[in-house]
Length: 265
Image 1 (cartoon, rainbow, N blue to C red):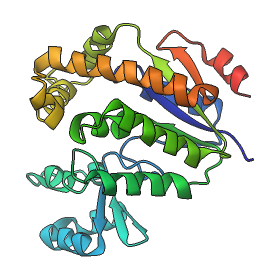
Image 2 (image 1 turned 120 degrees about the horizontal axis):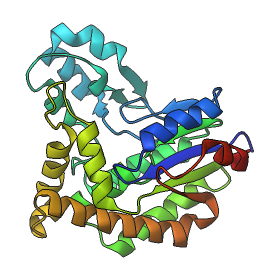
Image 3 (image 1 turned 60 degrees about the horizontal axis):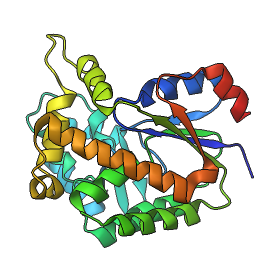
């Protein structure tokens, strides 16, 4: 077994990005994968295209062809485009490529499972740090878009645990005591230069427009908090029943990196 790999998890507002940065400072020789990066396991903020679809994208955006090619990784039968890393003022470019993500209900349940399980099965990483690559996007797609039952979700994560068996990994879970306070904090942090909120309206719309959100009348801040509270409870149960031996639970923003680093050595 090689060097340990770390999966940093927790709700939005838990401080995952900051924690990943601090953890990478403790382990400077580790490779870090954040949302939007090309990752061997997770595909958040990346377009997952067939060769035919990729060719169509290049034809549709000829002025961005070089940038697209520079942010594309070729896999077996597919191209992965880190499209959110491409800066452009072309209208709807990012929204159009969002259609090729594996999330937001873009894939049916069978295809979604095949992609996720296939990537984790092939993964043989050593000395890597991942931001929200086991829960957040993968779990929310199942909750909000595939509308899976809790038993179906648990079955999914039992299989994922089996695929990870024998591989060196640890889940570092940042636990948020007050979900509303965490959201309030992230609302204030993620604004543009004029102070206009960027993240919050997008996140509310993501929940409201999902099949589960529509079916359960999730709306505004209340709907978002209901969803995140449900997700938190579900993540805690998944950890307790499936990943308990592989998880370290930390109080969000109530930890010291020195103690954590010593415990991980």
